[in-house]
Image (cartoon, rainbow, N blue to C red):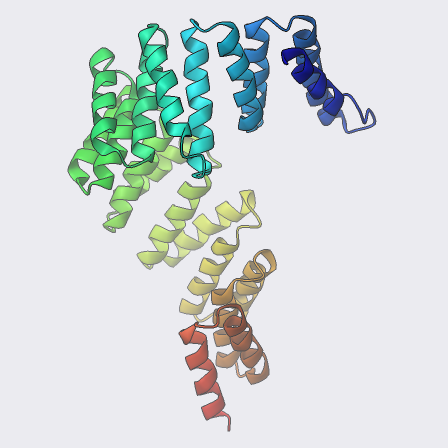
Length: 337
């Protein structure tokens, strides 16, 4: 069975030699691993290496097959059990039809802990798994064990922050997110979570946290967007425009950023520019009913009744219960009878 598995992978990837160079290099890496497995089908480390390759490509189903083989060949290797649990969890997160996968993952986590390898990682994964499936008490228990074993595990504090935020215990959540960045000053996700908490309260304390996240990762899309949205909600139009413009330099097809720029330009009375913003948003999301409605509003304001009517109708066509567009269209007809 293992030999057949290796041959199947070889057959799939050993063709089409006239591909792009990058694809050729990737194919060669996979083919080489599969060839080695065909030569040594009882070597669990080779299956592990190929599974890791599949994980880097988000091909978790193939990784699952290979880690199952590795565990079968070396059942007392705790690391293989941990990685198999991780793969089961990754699949279960995005495919809730795999209802038995979380329990299978827990079985392999328990085996990892029993074998006294990857204990902290296994407990972290256990906490994350329980959290993902709203098993809060079990999640806290697992994460507390991690912190007891090694307080300086930033992800344990981050996950506890998630839990308390989920429970509405904001002060506790802030404390644990702070713990995470105190341990790891480059923990991007913890800064993001702190920014989100403060932004919900319209507190400008959010700004330096997003800025810290951007120092770590200047391409953090959510940080750039949230900065723009915070400034927009605070009516700091120039700062918002700057943030959205910076975002669009990196992500030029981000429709929501164009839409928000359009909203700001309406507020500034710049309807022609707003029309262009909404048109850009529509070009990247043809079903963006709010953009059609807002562009229709701009056309109506500028006296272009025909185009306003077209956009209001398009918005209603996309979302039939869109009352804003229905009301605007009705008023447009009443004014132009």
